[in-house]
Length: 138
Image (cartoon, rainbow, N blue to C red; front, side, top):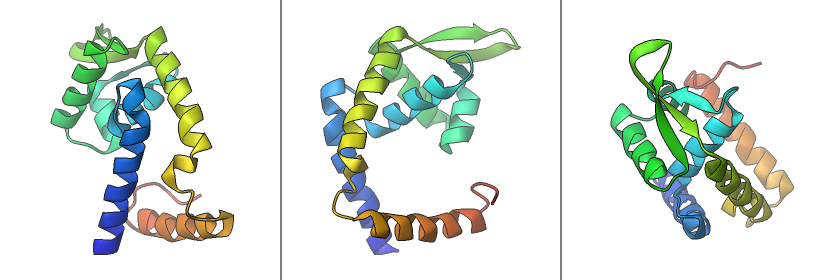
């Protein structure tokens, strides 16, 4: 477990370093990508937390930072009078697209592994995630 957690820390540090020129961290990148792939470019903060599996406080912090950078804006949720939507801006879409190109070129900091190693790692982690009901097995 210590090796898995340390690998997580190493990857996160490398990803954050790659994203620093865009003014975002990996957690902010994940939120931008999630919004990019949503039907309307907007999701409730609770839905973001659910999909990213993070606490509501963390979502608020991420959206606060993205909003301050002009990458998202908050709007009232028409389906929930008390709720708020995070809506990706054109600049947010641009940053997400450029960052994705860079992360893909760097193989998301997994360049030390060849294709077969990546496949094996994916399968091992997939089993762990399915067992934890992180997602349903197809």
